[in-house]
Length: 143
Image (cartoon, rainbow, N blue to C red; front, top):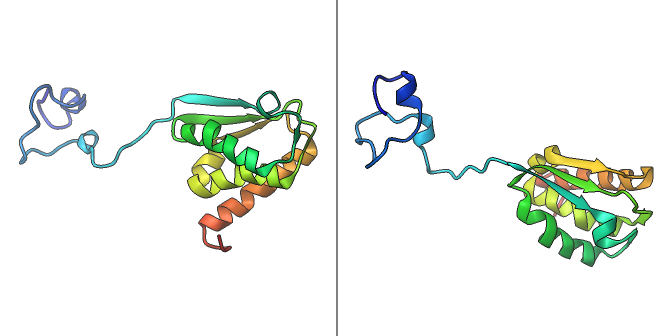
């Protein structure tokens, strides 16, 4: 490793052995001050199978979110919420499941969110839950 700046061998990765001399320019990959996580998985959440077909308990949704989705937000390139088989849900449940994770993780989680098997009423509830979460982090509404 090493070699001329701009040469592929010089840019290929960290050198083996001790760190590079302090006076030597370091390539961009050398900076370890910020931990970067590269999403590598798809998180599939079968809502009906895991929580049932009638969803009305916001506290249960919050517990589920904390246990089943939040730990994987930084690891998942897609978060698939599969509502196939869910017959009814209320806003308390959907807000606890979706809005809070949007508030905590922002647009990056919205960009990774995939809704599957939603009936029209549930899709509206989910889309309605996303908007206040984004507005809260943008400071347009009080928390």
